[in-house]
Length: 191
Image (tube, rainbow, N blue to C red; front, side):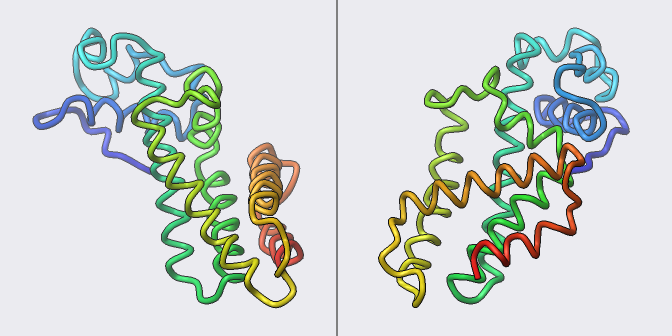
């Protein structure tokens, strides 16, 4: 998610501000990001972010949407590259954990209830959440048709898999579990 921080020169100022903020998010928690620092990084006046975001919370909501889009894209790419239902579910989970490990602050922001309240996501976040749920649900539907998985409730299995993988991602981002443990853990989960 690295962005150019050479300063804003032309084009879409809102995107340039979001890029500068995403750069900051790679090394700084969302709680420590200021609009003034984002403006400085983008090479614009300290008032420029207010023309596009109104306040810091609006910027962080936009970053959460971009983080969710990146998380979803990582999972979709991983699933597309895998063969077979078991392998696709495993790839989806591993992509989720790897994204979290590579971008812990963006990952945390995606699930921060101050910027993405469960049950009432923004108009921009809602379709991304739906696509993510459809991706997991579709892969689990295929999985429960496989020998050894048949008869399992796909809704319950989806919830169990997401909960487990999300918990694993949290443990990895917090340093309680090494990233290298994710792959064998996912193998143990879905094999």
